[in-house]
Length: 358
Image (tube, rainbow, N blue to C red):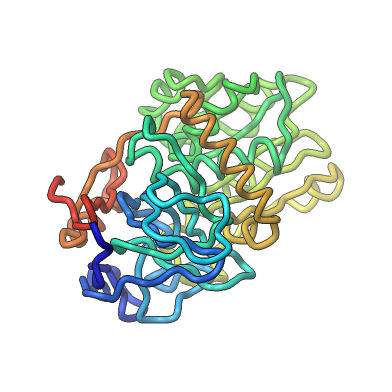
């Protein structure tokens, strides 16, 4: 079937609430340039960060009007530009569409066809569902990088993590079990404790009724914990730093405690100076966009292939998403930010047309 000349795309006209600024438009199907491929998109997720980009609450902003979706998708290669060696028309692939910082702008994924550079394209087997494949390149990759590249947590070591019930937190637990790493998992609600234990978390601390620092000391004993990941920030992030053994390190990759905050001055971690100075602790950040901007393309693809193999080998399990066609975007966006919404909303397309399942 020949490639159509036009396609549907979900386009933001400017900064604002996504449901207000997004419009379903008809756009020309782009053509791939040198080292690029045209991808017919099959499924692409809606991440909270996608919505924050549109609200102007993220660390970069696209040039408007802009197609939404700044993360990932799965599809098949429709056409190839010159010098795109190694790729094949019809091949099923994942596109890591995370904009590199620093780096050029990338095409949004909330459209039926997009052009991607070959070093952002990873072949995936047909045995992997569209739902799992389209969620490979952000959360599972983040979990892998945090545990193995950023902190190099070894078999038998303790890893302390906050927001253990989040998507990345659950993937960290799965990966840690696969690698023989022991986890101490922090949650806000007592009702989440059993769920994290059932998932394989070795120890769970509930900040609703437990003292984080004291519990870490009780669990880890005299040797303590030297490695932690935090996506809460605020006072909880500070307690994680205080709980670490001398020389310990915490990597901060999110700020859920200030999820709706727009004032940069309010995005803080109130560290105790005595603990940081006298115990020579380290607190540093991780941002996937900057990782893509500072990592060689071949190394990035290698990391993505590791994630693909972990998922296809069932060491990591990605929850089934909930499909929506583009024209139901208001409903999908609302569901994305609803508490306990179940599967992550996905925009899906069938044979180049928006799907009808919801």
